[in-house]
Length: 501
Length: 102
Image 1 (cartoon, rainbow over the protein chains, first blue to last red):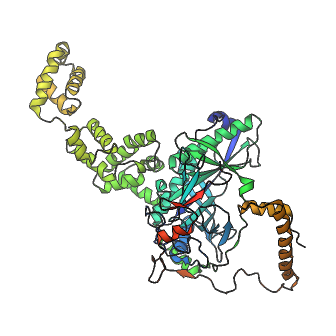
Image 2: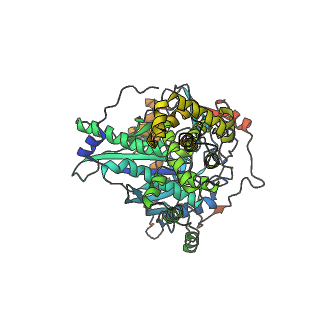
Image 3: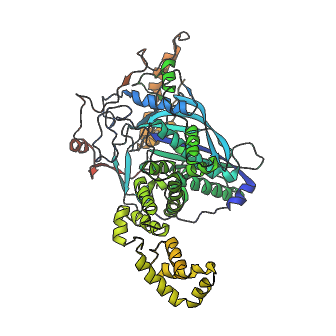
């Protein structure tokens, strides 16, 4: 469905002259356990619909849940990595709601007794460090996946009916909730993105989840409110659900700041509601109004006994924590010979993992960095996706780099090869062959082109003969043009100067 | 003592996605009130020295190993499962358009 009317927005800078934003981020992470949270069903991604279900996760009468010990371990390790306190004793709770994504008619979650609470995560933006407070990180289960049929966009709006696949229902989920985040307004969207990026790195370093946002293994809800400058009371917030890429986190935050500001500036009132983020337009639209939906009648789950992690267990798990991402990155920055600031650019571009893998595949670090934070970041931005979602692998990038270093491709040709790989034309070598992109390295072929260029630019050639080497660019340009860019410019220069000396 | 109003029953019915007639609302309000009042009598017992409990067994940390469908685990036949639902399509459960989300 198209958005009924264009939302009034205030300019970003103007909004921040009048209001300060307060954010709260809720991130859901699916744990990469073999089995579900409360039953032994497999958790494979992409399995045929409703093949990974059993009486427990379908909520059939008489079935009983049993907690997955590995999921509790993962939850505690996440809590510890976020500098949280780990509960001595906590329970699961039923969150009651009637919605077809949960066949039990409740979600088993935690309510006022989260397993982890009161921690923090440090993030860096523009060379400044911000400590993001963690309110809680609790255990729950994922819901089924609904496909809405009949609507134009596959979203809820305008759907005639829905089809539900319960393979995902019951997969262990950790919900990580921040404390209110108050940072300088103009940095708020970047801080939101940096937090989710940092959290994703941390989750991956722990090995508890692949945290692939494009697969829904990590999802973010952005809570945002504004208050007039100088006001201490929080304003009414909106909750933008399922913001599913790093880039979208930043855009959704920015959009909501501008939308709230326009409503408030015109004397309006913000309604507390959930909102849907539209990836293509970069906008949000109203979901459901909160007061009605938020009556979950939580109560302690009677089918499960409490979780009481012993302090010995907690300390043992603390011993399994990996090097903190900060320390890890400092080591990499030293290895690559770059500043911490440059490293932060890499991290905030979400490209760290790709660069490391490209280096592992044989590319020098500066080349790997150049491609992922340059050309590929540009394409990702154009396409509105994260670099990790581009259809090119680190091994393919390393191969392109190898071809450049072997003198078989120029930078310019390499960009065409990458373009071909991204367009689904196959591996770099296949693209080179199919598009005929080899560097013209045969000197006799080059000399023929050079002689033609000299003949066509006789006056310029005279100047070069007279010692004006700056003019050589004109001849090189002509040669590059006649070879369709497939000549190595440095070699052409050498040959031209040899001809005209 | 508890008094379940008609409005509360209407609210619960809405949360539960149940459509109740006016006569049913009156009927259930009275019934629920009687039930809740009966259960509330537990509050008359002297419980100052009884710790609150949410589970009858004094157990904690009952965990399962992270192993996919150990021997003896019931595996459901998808066709049979889908056949139990009011409607199915494309190997998935077909459900009505979600209320109040249009």
